[in-house]
Each structure stands twice: as C-alpha cells, then as structure tokens.
Length: 103
Image 1 (cartoon, rainbow, N blue to C red):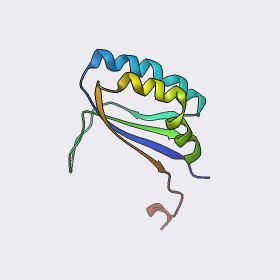
Image 2 (cartoon, rainbow, N blue to C red):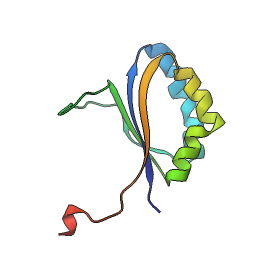
Image 3 (cartoon, one colour):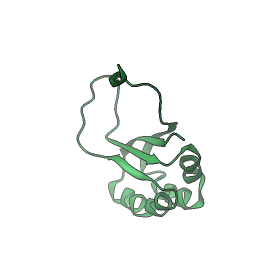
Image 4 (cartoon, rainbow, N blue to C red):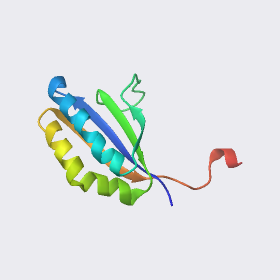
C-alpha cells in the first residue's frame, strides 16, 4: 500500500497565534502515524509562486491522511490556525511505479 502525504504551503499572518496551532496539531499527527519530511526551512522558488512556509507530512496510507484531516483532533487544531494563516493543503497518494534509476 502506498504512503500518502499532506503537501502544505502557508503564509502566516499572525505568528504568535500560529504557535497555538503548531502546539495543538501534534495530537492528531501522532494518532494517525504522521511524520514530518519537510517542516519550514530555507527554500528557493525556481518556478511559479510560493508561500513563505512549506510542509510535507508523510502518513502510512491515504486513508490515514484523510482520517487525520477530518478528525476532531486536527479540526480543533486547525481552528486555532484559521484567521491567522492562509494555507494550501493537498492530500496525495505516493507513487510506487518505475523510477529513472530502474534503467
């Protein structure tokens, strides 16, 4: 079964209030087996537009990723972010097909 990912791009408008969201989201992420692959950090926009913060979160599968998003725990955390940041969030299943290194 393929892993799944949240790909998140965020512009934080109120950094102090955003800290409450960051503190609260861990409960849902632990419950659904999430693991941060990217959490902020320096980046370069080489094409298109960007937001100020980028996050990639890995889940065991798409069902867990969707369940986390819809969970009461995550929605309570998200409510702390609402009005303090603008976010683009997609949930996408990982790819398990052939790779360039396969020749």
